[in-house]
Length: 406
Ligand code: ATP
Ligand code: MG
Image (cartoon, rainbow, N blue to C red; front, side, top):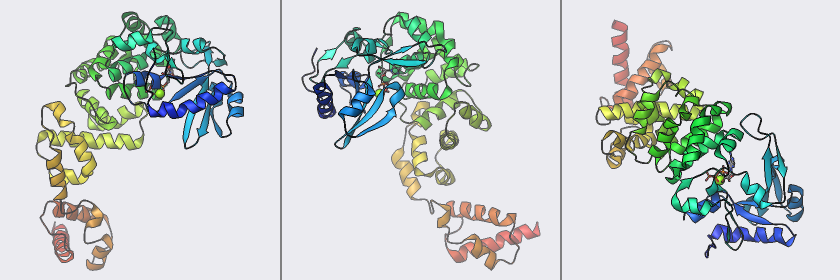
């Protein structure tokens, strides 16, 4: 098969392939970019595989960066673009069910394609667009099938992460996992325990954000892969509930974790620990905690001014976009309008500062000051008092007086 019209990024990159060929080596487009192009999807990166060894690539091109020389990858800078060029390789002696002990560079494309995970990922394409399909990947691509290259048991035994990759492709591409491949995932699911949480999390989240999340999740549950994932082992009921949410697409990672936490019935006090087990960044954990708070409030009724203020516009809209999972209509316009009507959107917009208050009120600094500012902020947001220096001051004097009397 030949692609008649190559997408622009391949046309541009073919100059690099040509240059390698001029030096007597082979080079092809490989992996995800070929798969995605055949599916009519835009691919984000163009990967190139070659028979030239890394040193030979560095000799051919003037501007290169060693990005993964041990694995045979050299980054070639060409005009304003950059390309990852990886030497054909085989991987051997997977002693611990994860990354290979060592890679061996080879001169044969076939050897290189053989070590790839799934047939749809083992396609290569030359610079003219001719597809090299040694494992019936085109057939599987057309039928929508995820099938391991070679014996699935061997392949998952070599590298257990491939099982999670299979599940995420099922979701991302809305493909079926072939029977033997699925059976091997079920058989070897417990090997996932050998894989680092970070690498599992990458595939897990891609699965949750995929086009047919339900499909990926159902297989994730049925093959029992969830049992080797942080915090999920004892949570089958919640996971099933999560997999039964309407099969709408989830747009962002924070939203995915928020929905998952809710379905797993994880209390807000346990959110942090759960997400820490997944090794998420503090930034993301904070976002998920805020979205979870927002979702709870929003499902209980209309947005309150103080909730919008706390979340900010971006997070409020992010919550709005997931209320349809619970049968409510998203009202992004209404949310934006309400947000724009807030008297203030940040504390620093208060027309009085802590220093002003200390100067005007005859009292030593203390806990009362923070409490007063919190109160002022809430009062302005709820329109109990105008955001005006004199009025804020009068309000503050009353506040202190009441405190003194009590
Ligand atoms: P994405 O679109 O998410 O980048 P991808 O298929 O390109 O998907 P990458 O992780 O970028 O995934 O890997 C590039 C290629 O390398 C794959 O298409 C596959 O051929 C091969 N590959 C990646 N990970 C593995 C693995 N664990 N085992 C075997 N081959 C793999
Ligand atoms: Mg890729």
